Image (cartoon, rainbow, N blue to C red; front, side):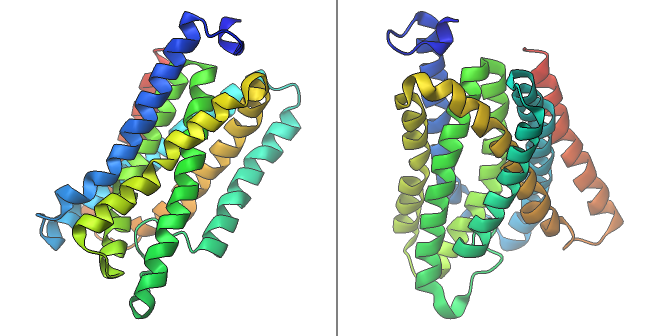
Length: 261
């Protein structure tokens, strides 16, 4: 098919390039969400951040189990290898969290060692955003609807993450302006990730086959290991019900996007 050929971009490939880079730029701009949190009172922010986290959980699980894994299995000639790659994705993100102390919501701010933590957050987020850019590009190579679903899941995940990261940078001693711009520069790694995937050229199809299940495993890990524990901090029945509803909204959004395929 034309979308698999990279020597002379056809109109369909140009469309994929447009959607991909528009998406990774949109994801990068999410880093400025910290601007909108500055005017919010702490109790209001705490209340709504858990709603965003809940929607992100549903979107991440929905994208993994409804879009990424089925697409990977459909294109794979070895379902066992694809399943192993999903597990590798889970373990890969576990390694990132263990060795880079990747905590999405500023849970481990380590106030006594603020400056190292700030730099660690910027570095780990840069790695994460680079992978996100490759994942988004790989998803658009499968189809535009799958790319949109993945981008939406990444955006819903990025919003609460960026709020937490921005708070960590402020606690690390950065000024508000410097924290915003450093966070944005780290987020631009997504553009580099997408560009890297396209530069691979004719090997991109193989990259898609490997990256999609790994991405699915990573998304499952983020949802289950990083985000779900945050929900357990709220014990009330009312808020717990709202969390389940928000998770359902995230899943429903992923289901709705299958109608575009």
